[in-house]
Each structure stands twice: as structure tokens, then as C-alpha cells.
Image (cartoon, rainbow, N blue to C red; front, side):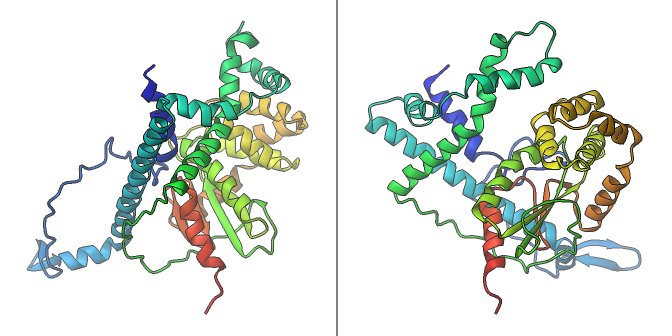
Length: 361
């Protein structure tokens, strides 16, 4: 492996993920549009862009008014991509400079400041995870064979957290200032979304976040870490409500949602929630029943609940309510009714939450 590849991989994982990432029926382009130094002037609002019938016409202004929301989102997306690109570029330069200053390679610097500062999980924890997953592994797979992968899985998020801390230390020392101008913010639009479902946080919290999610969507799994970060940053200020939005092309997602609701009947919704997101490639009904056993649920009650399909109506109600509120992909978050779509970074949540916590004039 090239020395540069390790640091580049970490930077890519932390700073180059799509800020507007989410599970959606429509595929995103494989590459972002190439930015050029020249731009074509837009037509004036009264420019006719379509004619039909007996002299009827549509102007450029009318077109823009009809699609003003997606156009505003596109401008925001362009800003986020550029901001992310700047932050990644800056961190890459800072890592290079710090490595040179210490007479280390970038790989050696990352190892010293990230990998070496994360202790290996205890042997008991590693063996426990192996025992829990053993039934789903290929026959004959030994503990020693999968131990490295278990270590990587358990320590991966801690390494990412430590990497962020290290990069922030470098940015603070270098007094990094991002001065990219933001696009004009459109007027705040609030949707009426019922906060019904499994919840975390006090009922009296000033901020309610209603999350529409899909257990088979990888972007929903990615968003989990950000949601946890938000809850930790605003203790007692946020009530999080989880609602189900299984997408039609995720065939195992509806039953996974039902499994979480069956677990909720036994007081373990969030434990099942975490288990499902950690095992997105194994959401068949036998696997779901296996997770119930691992979580210590009454498997007789759970299996009966899951097999009966009795929770399907709740999932369908959530799905219908999400569509009514404008959800067309997952994850989607309504912060006091304000939509944040996709696996957004912490700063996106913070911006909306801080504004909501400001005294109303």
C-alpha cells in the first residue's frame, strides 16, 4: 500500500462524502459537473422558453417560479460541495505540512495521531460479537479468522472521531478561516409532521426532530452517527422521533421496520434500531428473528408479531405521512417542521437548531 493512500482514505471518508447523500429512486450522476471559468448568461425572466397551441407561451420567469424549490436546493448543494471541497483541501495541506514538520510520512503521522491513540477493544468484547454473529458466518469460520474485521468494526467509529479531533486541532493551530460566500437563504418553510413513533428525549424539549428512515438505506445508517452527535451536543433540548419510510426498491426494509416495532412492544426499539443499521446486508426474516434472540426478547411473542404482519399498517401510515410532507428519499429530518434531506453533516443540523433556539422577536 502506498504511504499516501492511508491518509487519503481517512480524509475521503471524513470530508468527501456527499453532503446531499440519501437513498432515492433516482440515481445521482457518477461525477460532479466540471466547474469552468466561464458561465453563460441566463435568459431574462420574460424570455419565452416554450410555445404551444394558439399562441400560448411559457416564459423563463414562469419556469423558474414553478421549480423555485429545487433550484434553491441546487444552489445550496453547489455551496455545500464547494465548502466540503475547501475543507478537505485545507486538511490535506495541513496534514502534509505537519508530516513534513515532524519528518514523518503522512501515513506515519495518521498512525501516530489516530490509530495508536485508539486502544484495541477488550478480548471479551471481540469474542462476544463473534458469538453473536457466528450463526450468520460461513460454516467453519473461526474466531481468529474474523478477529481483524471485528476489531476494525468496533474501533472504526472511534478512529474517525479521533481523526476529526486531530484535523480540528490542526485547523485551530493554523487559524483556518473559510470565507466562501453562502447563497441567499430562501424563506423558512415548515411542514406539519406528526411526531408519533419511538422517541428519545424529553416531551418538553424545545426542538422536535422527526426522522423518516429506511433500515436498508446505507445513507440512513451513515446519518446515525450525526444524529447521535446532535443529541449529545444539545442535551435536554431535543426530542427525536423515528418514523418509517421504506423505499419501494428496498424489498427487505418494510419487514425490518416491522421488526423494530415488534421490538418496541418489548421496550427495545432503539436496541433493534441499532442492530438493524449495523447489519443492513442481513435483513431477511430469519436474521430479524436472530437479532431478537440476541437482544434478549421474548422470541415467541416477537416471532408471532413479525409473522402476523400486524405492524404493517403503522409502517404504511408513516410512509403516507412522509410522502404528504414532501419526503421523496431517505433519510429525511424535520426539525420543528423544517426539512433537512439526506445524510447531512452536523453543521447543517446545528445551523437550523441554533436558529430555532434563538429567542423569538
